[in-house]
Amino acid sequence: MHDDPCPRESEVLRAVEEGLWPADLRSHATACEACREVEAVASALREVVDAEAALPLPAAGDVWWRAAWLARREARERALKPIDTLERSEPIVAIVAIVAVLVMRGDLVLQTMARWLSLDGGGQALAAVMPAAILPFLLIGLALGGVVILVGLGAVMASD
Image (cartoon, rainbow, N blue to C red; front, side, top):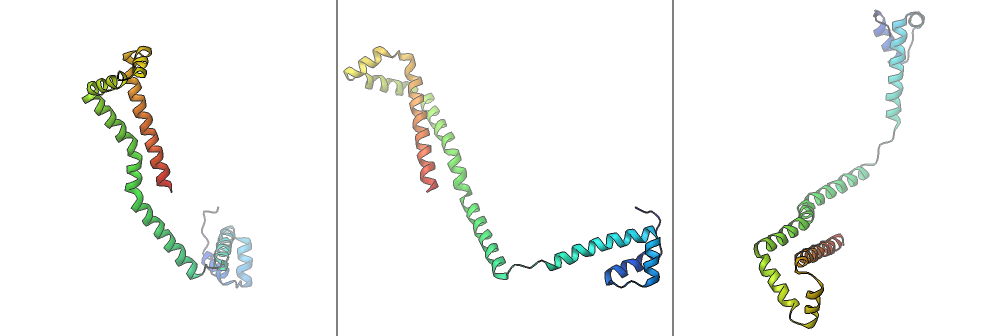
């Protein structure tokens, strides 16, 4: 790159733009380093501009169709955003509800389950095999498994 400006740089620039080179200007540009740089840069830019002008433009109907399609897609995404957020929060809400029921009324749940287990012979056999301390963990596991199954079914139904 050359730091010293030449007074004929504007003439060289105009000659590159118009494509008309006077003989004295061509000999000057060959000898002057600053003018050679101006010619090289202006020629490169002219080639880029000419190449862009040669590119075919898409049809107006194609542009309109694509814009309309993008607008419909964005509107659909905006409309479905609350539903997507709700679907992502379902497992958390279900787990919080199960934990809240077990914390507030866990003793009643345990008593009811113990009563169900002791009603028939199978329940008594299960109570004999399974220690009473495991029952809360079993209930929590069953509840979480049910939540997973329900959320999975909800996701399958929502994707249809």
